Amino acid sequence: MFVTDSASPTSLLGRPCHRQALLTLPAQEAHVSAARHLAADLLETWSVPTSERDSAVLIVDELAANAAQHGHERMTLLLALDHDTLHIVVTDSGAAVEHHRPGNAPDEHGRGTGIVQYLAQSTEIRQTRSGREVRACLRCSP
Image 1 (cartoon, rainbow, N blue to C red):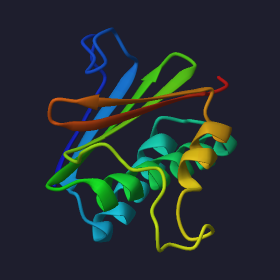
Image 2 (cartoon, helix red, strand yellow):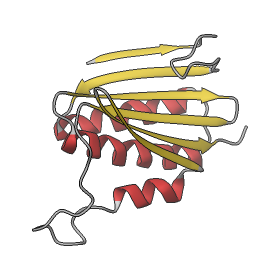
Image 3 (cartoon, helix red, strand yellow):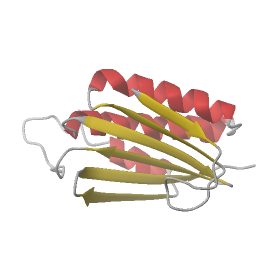
Image 4 (cartoon, rainbow, N blue to C red):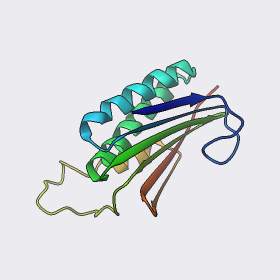
């Protein structure tokens, strides 16, 4: 596990950010709780209000669970607080995800993306050379 937390003018998002943290873990379901707990503790330290913090932790949980399920080697969680917006970026080393998985009951899988889209002000999913990147932005009141 690798964790950084910084208040730096140079952000991993490519522009200045108030606070940012990066966590890299093996892409295994056993590590999803570590991502969730780190996010909860860090957002409390950053004084993110409780309601936004709860939504952000749920988003992290869903995105990390997807990354653990579909990633092959590692998953990375980036949290960046930029004034009143929290950027949550999860990357994994997996290939594109099939949206329909035969053999699974409809209520067993597939709701995480909908939860993330409901809670976040914006979401973006893109395939990169090394895997997949999912971004969610959440407004945080001062």
